[in-house]
Image (cartoon, rainbow, N blue to C red; front, side):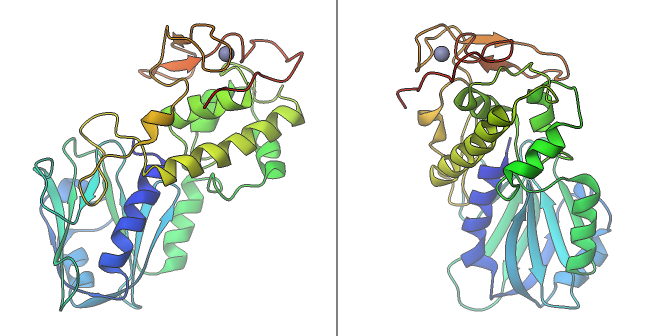
Length: 291
Ligand SMILES: [Zn+2]
C-alpha cells in the first residue's frame, strides 16, 4: 500500500491543485526521504516554478516542472499520502509545496508516518523515464496481454510474487494481486511459466477490471495510512472478494477462503479460493462471483 489505484487517485486529486499553477516554494521537512538529490537543490528547482503536468508511472507520482526546472518524483511506498486539506492524519509532514496566486488550495503537503517513501529529482522527463524503465516493467494498465504472456513465460516463480514484481509489470501490490487472481480463477502458487494463454488472458482482463474498479472507488483504505488528498477514505474494500476474507465463504462458490503464506512473499498473506483457483492446471473455467 498504496498500489496503482491509490497513487492514481492521489494524482487525480493533485492535478487540479498543481497543474498549470506556479509553486511559490517547496520546503523539505525531512531530508531522509530524499533519494538522489539534496534539499537545497530540490528547493531551488521548485521555487517559482510553473507546474506543467502531474502524472502517474506505476506507483510513482510525477510532478513535471516547466523546463528547465526538472521533474519531481514522489514514491509513497507504504504510508505516504498527500493532503490538500487539514487532517488529523497529517502529523508527519515530510514536504510542503506552497502555491502562488489564487487557486483552490494554497498548500500541498506530503505526509509519511513510517518515512519509507522516496523523493527524487530528475533534470528532465527523459531522465525520469530512464530511471523508471531501469527498475520497472510496463504499467499494469498499459501492458498488452501478449506482452504479459511473454513476461510471465520468462519465470517459473509462482504467479502471485511475479505479479508483485515491479520489474515484470508496474503498479500491482498485495491486495490487488489477490483480487486479480481470484477473478481470473488462477491459484497464486501456479508457476508463471506453466500458465496457459487462456489463463494469462484472464489475468490480463482481471488486472484491467480490478484496477479500474479500484480507481473508481478511489482505492482501498485498509488502515489509517491511505486517504485521498481531501482526507476521505477509498471505498474499494466494499467490493473486495478475497483479500482479508480468510475463512469466510467465497462469493462465487461458498468454499471458505484460504489465508496462507506462500513462497516468495515474506510477511504478506495471500488469500484465495481453493475451489475457484485450483492448484493444478485447470479443467474448467472458474465460477462467477456475486459481486
Ligand atoms: Zn470459490
